[in-house]
Amino acid sequence: MLLRRTVLGMAAAAVLLVGAVAGATATQTILIGGGAEGSAHTLAAHRICALVDEHAGKDYGCIGRTAPGSVFNIRAIDIGLVEFGFARSERVHEAVVGSGAWEGEPVAGLRAVFSLSPETTELVTNADVPDDLVHDVVRIVFQDFDALRRAHPALNGLDPAAMLEGLTAPLHPGAARYYQEQGWL
Image (cartoon, rainbow, N blue to C red):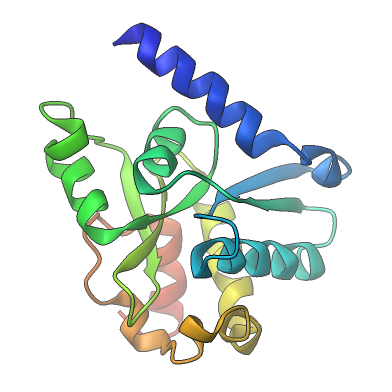
């Protein structure tokens, strides 16, 4: 199991850190795992990072990357290789309860940020990611929400209120704080 996690960690680093130099001038670099090349999830990761880079000044640099999928992103979050990742809701649920690919080994720190409705995909993070960072990313996304909608035709119908529905992991406190400030929780 340790060897498998080590290999996964090395693979995740290779896949996700290619191009990390772009965020080198920022105080903190944020990595977001998407999905397959050209997928709505990867394009959403790229768009979120473009928004963060545009609106966060020198506080954060953000890199959205393609990734092999939900299991990969959840494991990369769990071992601290990325701050955020997109994952199918059923995979998030399996990780939280310790079933499927996580049989007997739940990912206790997995936290939801929002869903991409009407898809059943969630942006997730780890409980250890600072509240202020998660709050800032969520604030930036919703501050220029139409830019996220334009990232891919599948995202055109996104509705902010619906993005809090159907989450299968506990909500991250930084995200919850933003939603409370908006009166959505």
